[in-house]
Every structure is written in C-alpha cells, then in structure tokens.
Length: 454
Image (tube, rainbow, N blue to C red; front, side):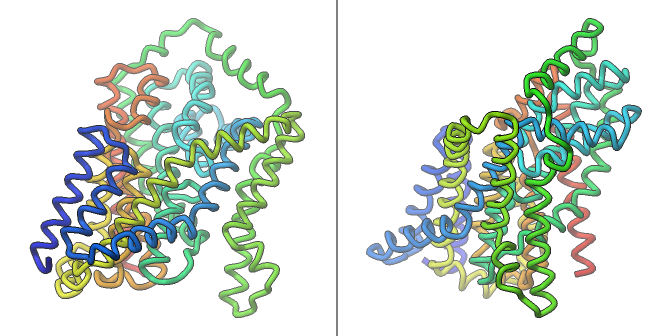
C-alpha cells in the first residue's frame, strides 16, 4: 500500500488504537502493539520481516531510555519517603510567604513534580494546601487548582519525569540520530513553564471565586493538626540542601558536561558524570543517603521494588510506542510524507500539539500521549522540517503541552485532584478540566513564540 491510502490507513489505525484504549479498556501496551502489527501488515511490510521490525523498535527504546526512567522514578520515591519532598515544599512557602498561598502552591507543585509523579505529588502536598487555606483564609479551590497545575506543568515538561525523558530520547535518537540533551530539555521545559504558570495563577484566582470546596468549612485547627501529624510521621525532616541535592546535583553534572563539550574541551571524567544515566545514579545515591539518615535504609529494597512496579507499565508502553514508530519508518508512509512534507510543515509545532492533545483527551494518560506521539513523530522529524536539536526540544515541549490538554474523567489525576480537593465531579470539570485547557493553550503560545527566535 502506498500514497494517500496508506496515510488513511495510518489515521484509522491511530483512531482504532484510541478507541481500544479509551472505550474498550484494552491496556495501552496491548493496544499499541496490536495496532502496530496490523498497520505493518496493511502497509505491505514483508511478513517475514515484521518480527524483526517489532524487535528493533522495542529493544531500541529500552536501550535508550529504560535505565534513565527507572533511576528518575527511584529518585522521586526516595524524596517522597524521606520527607525531602515535604521539606522542598516548606522551603518554597518560606520563600514566597504565607500571604501568597496560591503562588506558594503553584511553585512548590512545579518543583516537587520534577522528580515525583503529579498524582503522588498532589497527595504529598495536599495537607500543606489545607493548612495554608486554614491559616490564610485563601480559597481552597484556588489553592487546589494552582497546586494541580504546577504539578502538571512540570510532569509534562521537565525530566526526569518519564514522559519528557521518553519523548526526548525517542525524537533525538530516531529523528535526528543523536543523544538527547536532557539539560536542554529541562531548560526549555522550565522556560516554557512561564506562560502556563501565569495563566494557571490567574485562572485559579478567577475560578476560586466561582466554585467552593467542602473543606472550606472545616473545624478550626483540624487541618493544621493533620499537617503537623504528617511532618511528625517523617521524624526530623532533612535540611533544604540535602532535600534539593538529588535533583540539583544531577542537573549541575549534566550542565558541566554540556558546557565543556560546547567549549570543545571535553573532559572524559566530566563527560562520564554528565551522562544522564550516571548523573541520575548520583541523584539516587544522594537519595539513599537521605534514606539512611532517616533510619529507613532497611526499606530501600522494598522502595526499589515499588519503583520497578510503578515504572514497569510506563516502560512497556514507551517501548510499544517505539514499535509503532519503527513500523512507520519501515513503511512507504515515510516516502509519502516526504513528498508532501509541505502540508505538515505548514502546521509546524501545532502538529505535535494537536496529535498529543487528541491522544490525551481520548485515553486519559499524559505519559501514554507523550510517548505515543513521540513514537509517531520521530520517523518523520526531518521530513516535516524539525532538523536541529533546539527544534527537537521544542517538539518535546509541544507534545507535553498537548498531553496536558485536557484532564477529565478518563484521567486518574482528575479524580485525585477532585477527591483530595474535596470538590464535586461537576466542579472538577470547571476547575481541573478547564484549567488544563488554559495551561495547554498558554504552553502552545509560548512554544510558538520561542520558535520565532530559534
């Protein structure tokens, strides 16, 4: 099959994949793998070579990102279990002040979600949100929205969260044939967080006046006590420096390696430490030191086991996305896209945004939307005009922006925010769903503006 018929087959395949995940509740791994095989058969790939294509797509993805995702998730769970994530949040509150609780929740959510999954991050920080609401008299809904949006923005934009890591490695590796510069992705992801965070803040202030949560009528002292009990359950919290170190030190190591490389004076040992796998391993070691100081080193085995259980599905879904990308690159669809690249080029960064937004809205998971979109786009990166590392980085962020648009009933995070924020379901649509639409569009606008200067 060639030409427009193959393109139509591809669109039908993606639509069928979305239906399988969202309507038939078939696991994303099974759905993506099954659709990949069907598309390979329909596309006319020689039947005897299909197993090889599948194996190459699967193993290639594991080779490039598997260890990085595991180590990033392990750093996150160590920060969560030692109370370091709570200490980071407290540090932000002290920096911003209790007179700006919405801003404090926004910033602490954004920082904590860099290593910690947004679902876990919301649960961890929710007692602080409640405490601030009671102590300051701020809107509970406004603080819920800013916390949720801050967590979500970092979750979709900034490594070592698995989605952005997977997208970066997929797009750079398959699309440009070079190793992903995670520090650059972090930097651009942080830069592109500005517009959505501003939009989230003002939307939260607006919607907080329109919607009321159940916990705004709590008995005096109840929330403060629960917050104090949470802090007490960790024992003595680590210092601010020790809490931030598992995140900051890997960033510094990767930054030094990039700086030496750009200066043309690469130092082998610095390059070794600045490799994402090694840098994140250093972050894990620092996290283990925190665990030891908290007297919980005997829990490290169970925490590692818990981490592997958590990231396992993500790894397999990511690898399945790699299989779909390999099928696409092995078919005649590449030739057709190359011949008609001007059409997709005209969409520019709208294309990855729309693709990820459709996948996100349809099946609920931002990580699945990010990894699947990256797998689809990687084989055609150069054909549609994304040929430089900075352009690839902006594609990662554009995909992340789409993958937060929108969170609704098929997204577990929607229910975490709605239930822990003590809101009715219909209020969740007004706050979480519309809020993610606002920050998604704000993110896209910032990507498009930055693209004018690079």
